[in-house]
Figure 1: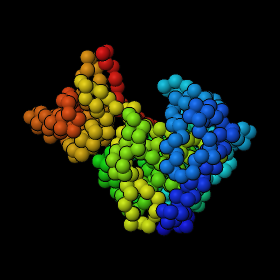
Figure 2: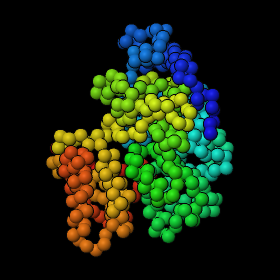
Figure 3: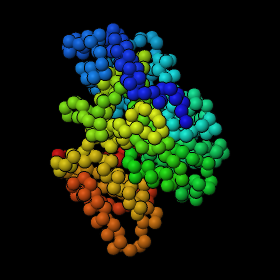
Figure 4: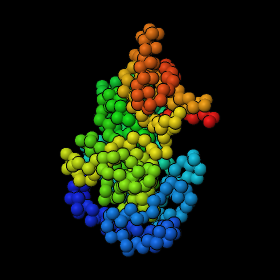
Length: 429
């Protein structure tokens, strides 16, 4: 099924012509109206009229999260007075990033969500229970308006309050949920504790999880726990929020909507392009945004391009699951470690539960606390010792350093009903 078949199946040559036209318009507009880019163009001695091909995009300056914070609150706006909505980042690491949307931007972002949902097989008969945080965060509102544009009934449940979530699912027979992977795992435990079997007692058939990195093993755990299809999606507030890229029913990578975004994959250290299929940092340029166009935004997200055709018929190239962020890498005893490497090992072991915490302490020690599954302890201490040893060895093979592992009872680790906090760094080095 398609939402906009002409665009979604456009031949590559036509799609690239469309991208170039939109790129040239975007570069011209920011060159006329955004002081930040005017200064950058001057420093690079770059004239917008010299952007003649898509490859010329590499001559454009990168934009970073630091740039967005430095121009806070409205230094990147291209259309003063036309913005209808403001979103910001949390600002937990300093000044927040402010993102402005015009009426056209809001309509376009809703359109991309509708396109994405249809690609997963969702129809107007489905009912979406939106369990994301409403407010300054883009995740909930953008999904909300996109689902409404498609014609679905939307329940704006927001996060947490699991008793209420269950009541809504039962009373209104929600068929689709949208939440973070960590809350989906927590909610699965909650249902189990109340003797609720989602297959028998709920009407769910699909789940959309996002807003934090997660592994394929976590996806399978969620699918198994609820008996549903879970689709990988990708988005970030700087690029409209959710709906930048989405899996179709083939589940072979996420189609990045290239009529709206120009993507590059670059070496995180050098900024130079890497070949299709090789992991690198995703860099995105908005092609349709009116209020706040952004050139070559360094997302810090690590992925790779899947250039082979998709069986669904869509021609927009796909990206692989995000495997980590170039700025969330931990350095432990001189070894580079991504939290998702650890999650991949833990979520692949049926003896373990769904919650874990990475604690960095002392001079450079890593301890991984992980909950046992409800059926993971049979009372035999030697079995626990063997399991702990097995986890340590699997982790050492994955991350190339030996952590400590602490097995803890089910439900004993802190629970997040929004984005999960997986790493506590208390090192003094």
